[in-house]
Every structure is written in C-alpha cells, then in structure tokens.
Length: 379
Image 1 (cartoon, rainbow, N blue to C red):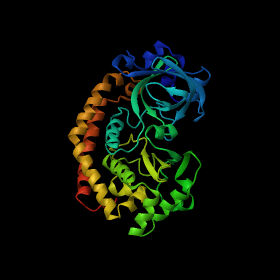
Image 2 (cartoon, one colour):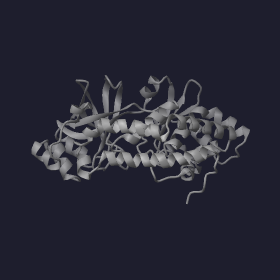
Image 3 (cartoon, one colour):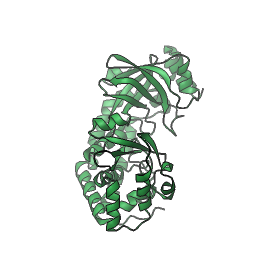
Image 4 (tube, rainbow, N blue to C red):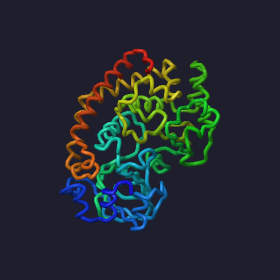
C-alpha cells in the first residue's frame, strides 16, 4: 500500500487506527458541510484506493439527500491519480436530487486543498457567462469512515449542456497540455482533443489550428468566426487570464459544437491552479496559439480589454479577499478534521494569505495588459 495510514483509515474503519492518524477527528457534517456516503465491496475498496487498477470502474452506492443511488466509482485525475488523497468519479444510474446531475467528480483538490482558488475563480467565470460545472464542498465517507473534505463537481456531458440551454452535437475535451492548436493539431486534431460526446468530426478543430499560421486579416476573422463563437472565446480567454490559470491554456477545457448555429464554444474545467505562480502572460499565450492569434486582431484585442476591465471593476483584490475570507471561515473547522490537512500540516489561514498575495501581484500584471503594455517575452 502506498500510504499505510490512510489505507488503515479507509480499509479497516477502526476508530483506534483513525485516532492514530489524527486525534479527535470529527465529522465535518457537524459544521454544516453536506455529507456524502459511498459504499463498495470490501474486495473492491483496497483495490480501488491502493491497488493500482487505474480508472477501472467498480460497482458502488452513493447516499445524498438521505437517498441511496446505485452506480460505479472510479479513480479520477491524471497527474494526481496517485496522490496521497485520491479523487474519484461516481456515475449514478439516475439523477441525484439536490445535485441535479448523474455524474460527479469527488475531487480532493490536492493543488487547492482549501478550495479557495476554485471558489473564487468560479465567481469570475460566471460573471462572463462562461459555462462551468456546479460545485459544492462535501464531507466524503467511504464505507462508514471519514475520507476528508472533498469538492463535488458536476461532470461535463450532454446533460450539462442541455441544462444550460445548449444543444451539443459533439463535445471535445482537451488532452493534457496538448490542446495548443499548433502544427500537430493541423495534421491530427485528436492530438489535442478527444471526443466526449457525439461523433468526432475533426474538420472544425483542424481549421482553427490551421489559422494560427496565417495572417491576421479581415478574411481570417471571418473564417474563424464561421467556426468559433467569438464572444464566448474572448470571455473564456479573459477569465483564464484574469485568474492566472497556469494549467488552463492547453489543458482543462471543454469545447462543444452547438446545433443552434454550428459554432464551437469553450467551457471551463478544473481551475484549481488559479492564481498560480508558474506562468506569466507570455508563457500563457505560448501555450495556446489560437488565443495568441485572436488577440492579433484589433477588434478582438479591444473586446478582451473591455472584458478584463469589467472583471477588474467587479473583482478588485479587496473583493476577492472578502469572498475568500468568508469561504475560508466557513470551511476552516471542517479542514481541521481532514486527514490530509493533519498529515501534511496544511493551515487554511496561511494558504489564504498566500493566495491573496498572489492575487494582488497578478492584478498589477493584468492592469499593465489592459493599459496596452506589450507582453514581455518570457525568460
């Protein structure tokens, strides 16, 4: 087993062993966090959590809103699939009341354990009407034992889009750090995206990738606009820039083609690295050649600037700190009983202060961009 202490907690369900990892743990449901219970067989539990079966789905049941639902549980994530605190995916056979979706990710948020980055960035996505999944913090119990504070995240699928008034005929998910719309996507669009709904028609993605090597003239804007819903694309770009999403320019995005107008639109997904410190403006645009090409057009650069100014007015650092402090206070007592926080000595207060400092610094970079300062080459 990779992590003996956590394995003992989740597999043996012994109060003695639970205390060995953290003294005096309490059920976060006592602090107003919704409780989610998952049960699976004693044979499948250690294999799923610690046996290296990858993303294989196993039969399981989930209890929410005092009702049990049958379905399948699997590990979730790419680079975090072997993390100390695992993330999961649960697919129910019917709609789960209170959540209003069938499929959810139970995310450990190992890169955002306090959920603050995810929570704050969700406000920003919503302000520009970029479609994103519904989320809520929950206390996850597996076979009767508290596994920790998790974020329940709606999965993006046909149901997701239809609930929001869209009519998708195909859905694409970005492949990890490959959805850059570069030369390889011109040859093979599936280098950057994989189909998640409907038949895979690569023509639109290939056309967009091919445009990144062509001159930014009026004819190009017409061609791109025939394939891509430009206002959505610029809104999505504005949000990703504003929240300094170092992991969201060639990764962690969904596209769908809508039957209403035949155009492709962006949706946000997995922005737990918001306000990270591993990227600058130049490196962000190098990750996605389509975004870089779009802002070569003066009209789209102006539209992006206006949207960033709007976000600056709605979410100055002081407002983000106010929202983050309220969320941190709401979840703080819950984190005190989370085995992951205890084992690694994570302090939600210190994490909050680090985040707010990053927000303040990045806001200065966004201000320079809005004022028209050229993007300096990344070192």
